[in-house]
Amino acid sequence: MELLQLKYFKTVARLEHMTEAAKELKIAQPSLSKTISRLEEDLGVPLFDREGRKIRLNSYGKLFLARVNRVFFELAEGRKEIQNLSGLDFGTVKLAVSIPSILPELISSYLVKHPKVHFQQLMASNASMQHLLEKGEIDLCITSSPINGPEIEWVPLLTEEIFLMVPTGHYLAQKRRIRLIEAQNESFISSKKGIRETESYCQQAGFKPNISFEGDDTLVIARLIQSGLGIGFVPALIWFFAPHESVELLRISEPVLQRNIGIARSKRHHASLAAHDFFQYTIEYFSGIAEKLKQLGV
Image 1 (tube, rainbow, N blue to C red):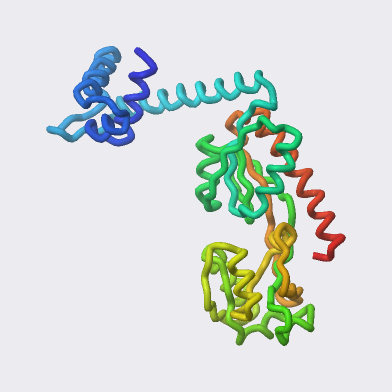
Image 2 (image 1 turned 135 degrees about the horizontal axis):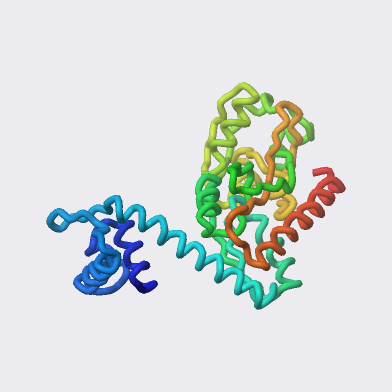
């Protein structure tokens, strides 16, 4: 029994289609069929039920697949442990975030100390990040809401206030602090991902917002507000990393709007030394950011 046979078996078991599996593995279909047949001969039982060209993983196959998955899991964990022996400075950190604006300063400040650490970053929703953590496909994720699970460790980093951004000269700007209901007749500008939050915030105040523009780029949204085309919500952290001119931040007295930022990792999967170090660094980094926000009154 060879490791390559097990890799091929995993792919065929996932797709339950020999031709598609051969395409994914980039080998000839007859060669793949022979490999699976030899594996079945070695085990002494069929792993698939065959009906014409259709194949289905049978009870033997399902049992064997569970063991094969454990084999590959242990190999992956062993690889991570061996990589740790090479030291922190050559490690890799696989990171997912839901708040990309925090990354440039966070990662660049870390790389000043450890310039040879390699980062792999992706964008994902909270639900998909939990799935990726549990499967061991990422080491860490930074989210704007808690991730819960028996195999997940989620550490809060910062509770940040949500402000209302209005253009300088807007009739609300002089108030500095308002009840959100006072803005019920205004046009709101929101990111596509933030529409649900915009609607939720306004519903808490007792009205449905008129969202006049949806965008992806927070800089574009800020410029639209600068131009007087509407108003919008902005978390303190985004303002801290990218303040804008010709706009004013209004503190919302009712309802008080906040969001919790945290970092999560798996309790089950072995993390690289670099991932563990970056996890601790991020906690300390945000502790410093929280203190700076207090000093700025944001």
